[in-house]
Length: 136
Length: 136
Length: 136
Length: 136
Image 1: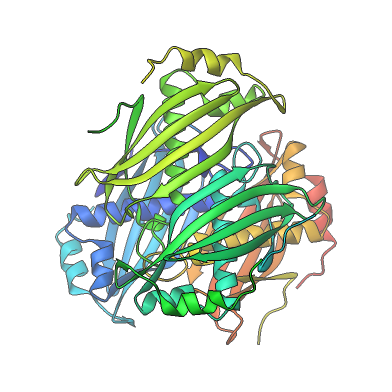
Image 2: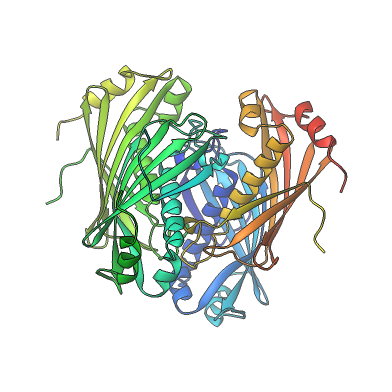
């Protein structure tokens, strides 16, 4: 059974994302994960780009990516996400499933934090928005 | 005979730049051209990123790219550049040659201009640096 | 009045597509255009990746891109496309419009051709699919 | 003191690799790491693209990336690499250092394996080349 998630976003592989092995290049999964996180943030009222203009930078401290099944030209998939707040850290659990058969393609843990005017600090805007989410 | 150029920069294809046809993806040539322009600008004392911090944005108005021979994994190549100032426009003629055999891979004309505090305007820093170049 | 097109595809800017000027990087527009062309081809029964497996490579000979208004973080836009067959060439007229205000962001002419087993040749699969389209 | 490495490769940040925060986008580090691995493989006689043509696919099973200090426009840096063979796995320890001050920017562990004709298997070409390396 699939886990509970806070957010899901559907994508389709674009051919330019595939490399000479004919599969989506490993680095591109981080693009998918980032876009899903930013769309999730928007869905809870946080705009990554606008926050940055205000001096609040959400940054990735660690990305741990387990590649399970490669995505290919034409594949549709879903990036699923749940998030936990741990002090200064926002930990995103992000899984990618291929839609045709539900197979897991990637399992990722992305640890992020926030810099306020360049210094590691709690960004109350982010924390308060995330703390309203149900615990999963 | 090769033309005269103001600047040359050597590159090597990186495998992630190749797509499922096993050749460098069309969009990646614009990355090569941009990087060569920015390195050229540095060589005449202009820093694209620092200019932007000062409110001077160099922007591309038109890119005309003629694809001649595809680059592949492992290829070394050279981006050659000459520039002409025409009023508010800086026109970059940029050609890419494969080093193994001198074959032309791409012939491009990139028309750029400058925005000063968001408005189309001559940026004297850029114009004076470019006008010192020999006419080719 | 907007022109007639054979195909339209909606996109949203992804933050990783923006560069240090805070606007979508020039090269990324070619990604958008390519993806729209491939989705258009699918809509008329042609699969770019499958064609390549069969020895038919659709390739870009020339890309002429006029940048009008930069796209930014969060922008939704539409890539509109019409195509003309001229002998060995398939010419794609591709325009990008921002959805919020209908402003034209990019006007592009992409001249493509086909290689069959590595040689410039008419690919009857492609030609017959495209010739069924209405003349616009 | 810096560790011992099997291979080092110098790079310079290209402006298109920076995102709207003005720093190299997180996904781009995987491009740097991949290119360094492929150049390392070439240095021991293994060509990633040629291996793939022969039915041997080197694939990433896991990427664990710790982001320490962001790279910015103009930065020069070095990707350093050592590798360990563990059965079916080739584990690459890859660290990125900024050249101006020696600061560590990224610490990564990339676990790769090989598929021979689509099945997980030892690729003797790879194993024998890697086993000639000194143990560090």
